[in-house]
Length: 354
Image (cartoon, rainbow, N blue to C red; front, side):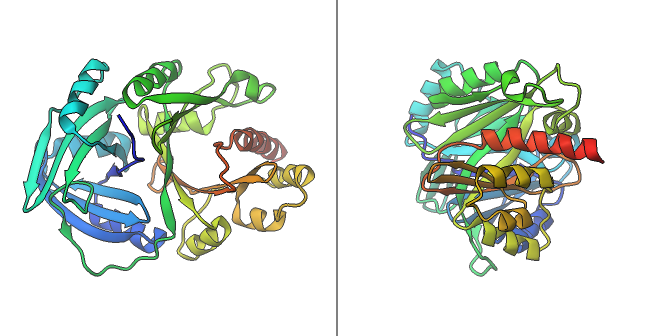
């Protein structure tokens, strides 16, 4: 089964109109369409936003009967419910999923609106998450039934969805790695664990999975139980009340310029301790350290290849879902493992000096 990247990411929220508006005004997404539909239990509304090849769906309940949406938001806050992958044939995908021991949460659901046709199958992921496999014909939107919006503010500096990162409980990562590898034909390409965070008071395990036949990357992390201090991984699990998709990474062409623009719109980024940039300057003095410091950007360098990363504060009230913006210079392939370690070290030094 070929994977052509992430077709969409769907976020369940309490008030879709307001969250969609924030994505437009703060992040430059274009509102492309709105869909009112009868969900599994009750009426729902979904706003379709697009920037580059990134499609975000913002969904909320329109009536109390839609308790699957309402209970998800009650438990997890504004959080990602599912991501979608486009397939060529829904019937062959259904057969493949059954043979691959996927946990089906729906059968084939077909929708036809005018000349638009879409068919979807959902499978279980983590506690309350899902993966949606979608076959489309004559659909501009991720699936059929959206009323197109002709005029909308947009800036569209986001290129695509680079990867999704999830947090699971202790000893669950191996299970989900195998589950996703079987279903999506992914390969484990990078692992960091206990030895990577030796002599630090906090840390985590991180696993990176890639598709060899399409553009798709998935990161799964879990806590390290023997560490003295809780990390942001532990914080997510506690505040999210279980496993889930922790952050979504968007690729951009110019990260420094992007951060300046987003800051002008009120987007707040995670503060990086000064020690991180002191160490970075010693290792790579040729980099524009002051510009990186001002923008709170992390930088990982491999000869002429560079990875630039920046993280927003959580987009909701809970310290759970947040966004990452990433720039890959000269086709950098990694996911910032060294950045992660250096940031953990810098944070501990910062806390010890307070």
